[in-house]
Structure formats: C-alpha cells, structure tokens
Image (cartoon, rainbow, N blue to C red):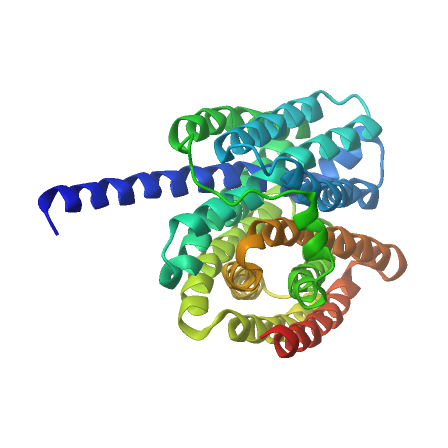
Length: 394
C-alpha cells in the first residue's frame, strides 16, 4: 500500500467517523424529544389540568404516529439523497418541539407530537442504514451501536435534564431545549453527510414486500414485545417513585439519570456481545434477564441504594438489545434492510405505545405497585417471541 493510498484510507475513515458522530448527535435530539414526556408527566398534568395517566398518553400518541408514519415516509423519500432526508427530518422535529412549547392546551400538544413523530420517523432508520453502509461486516454491530448511542445518551442526559428543567422552570422550557439542540444538528448533518452518498433506493413496493414476509416481520416485532414490557413500567416511573419511595424532583431525576447511565453502558456492551456471540443468541439471553428483573419494582419501597443499583443493572440489560436487533435485521433484510430498519424503529414506538397503554390501565385498575409484575409477564412473551423467531428465520 502506497503512502497516498494510506492517506486516502485514513481520510475516508475520518470522514466516516465524523458522519457517525453527527448521526449519533441527531439521535440524541430525537431520543430526548421523543421520551421527554416520561420525566415531565406530572408538570404537564398539573399545568393542563389532566390526569397523570392522560399526560403519559402523549407518549402513546407519539408512538402510534411514529409507527404509522415512519415506514411510509421512509419509502416515500426512498429516492431522495440521504443528507436531505436526515436534515429535513431533524428540522421538522425541531419545529414540532417549538410548537409543543407554545401549545395552549392538551389537544394541541398531542398534535405537535404527531408532527414530531413524522420528523423522527425518517431520521433514526435512515441514520442506521447509512451507518450500516459505512461499516465493514465484522464491525457492523458496533457501528450501529455508535449511532444508536445518541438515543441511549438521551436517557442519561437528555431526559433527566429535561425533567429537571420542567420541574424548575416549567414543562414548556423542556421542549424549547429540544428545539435549540435540533438547530445545530440540522446544520451539522448538512455539512457532514456527503451529498452523493451511495444508497439502495426503496419505494412503497419494498415496504409491501417486507410486510408480506412473515419470518421477517416476526423478527422485527420482537422489538415491540421486548420494549413494550419495559415501557409498562418505565412510562410511569415518576408516579411510581413518588408514590412508593416518596421521591420528589431530585429523587426522580437521580433515578432517571442512573437508568440513562445504564442505557449507555448497555448500548456499548450490546454491540460487542452481538459481534462476538451472534445477534439472536444475545437477544434471547437479554429477554430472559428482563423477565427475571422487572418484578422487582412491585416490591418498592426498598432502600435507595438498592433501587439505584438494581435500576442500573436493569437498564444495562434492557438497552443491550438495540445493536443486536439492528444487526439481525440488516443480516436478514439484505437489500431491503433500510425498510426493515424503518419498521424496526416503528416497532420501538409500537412497543412504547402498547406498553404505556397497558401500564396506564394497570395503574388505573391496580395501582403503581402492580407495574413490575405485569411488565415481567410481558417480557416472558418476548422470550417466547425471540425463540420462535430464531427457529423460523435463524
């Protein structure tokens, strides 16, 4: 290899690294804006005169809109350059966050969440497809984990920070924060992602093809059953901690921060595990661990140190699934991996929506302390799901 060749390879690697960093930053903004509601349920409920369960339904609104819009919008924009799609999606997401901060009532706030879902629905799957295309096969899970890192970092910094801002200055300022963070990300995407980036164009027919593929859809929907069981509990963590542990603003923020730290560690660990042991095998082990851990939260109150420690371990195990699941779908999807990834991103929000709805019903019917048990039962379904999917599609 000549000096010029080595220089070109180094420059290419550096450019790819810069793209991955920017895509991860964009996912951070998406993650913060998407799941911000988890930490601001009570301020929104108090200010807009709705119940905490109704305020938690904002996540359901966003999730359902994302699930419907993401695969369709990815298909409809499948002929456009990836830079345009990513920058446009982030711009729409930022504008929607600003409109949420200005929302005069609960209905309007729900409508802004639908617009936000439309923007986010093209950013996350397209970012994953770009990352997969830039990485060699043997490091693909770790590259996907790097892009997904932004979403998990939002758990560490974005959601707890948004919760603190909401409890201190009002929930509107939490949404303004998302808007202000989105602006530089739009500019960074436009300047960093190559305009002529090679990609596999997709169309609505590709979406239809994947939707008709039974084993592929079973593999995709594991995301919904796995995350759905988690969101039965996670959506209502703030009311649970307030009621069972007597936590206020600082205590709730601290637990969310610990959960976020675990999410980052899990994201990094999950990519390495999937590259080393295989995607499906990693996912099966993680689903079993979640099934065993979730019922713990039905035994609150417990000493604070135990709660923090267990929450860290729970989050590590839960968020280790993301890279392995994306890698599995890239391997199964082939030339239609981009559509599979968009459906997987939609499944994240299907799971969040269904899990949140079930959680709300549990809280209304049985109280917050029943959430852990119900979440554990839900995760047992995900264990059966992944084992069945593995046997059918490998």
